Picture 1: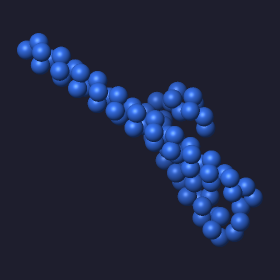
Picture 2: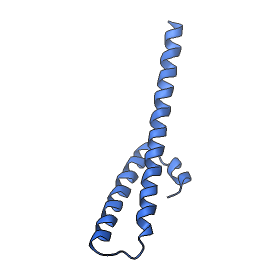
Picture 3: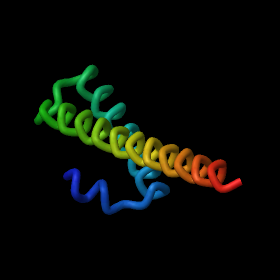
Length: 79
């Protein structure tokens, strides 16, 4: 999954997809441990996709915190 596709998802969809991708990665690692898989580079791709998703979620959390802090600061200045 590309970064542009990840940013288009809502936070709820992103959390759901992240959970799915983590399960896929775990299953792929287990299959690889038992017997060699056809394309071991898929593990690397899934790992990077999971990292991209986690990074996007964290960026959204930080943006939300920043907006809340700015709102609180403006309310404190007013009153």
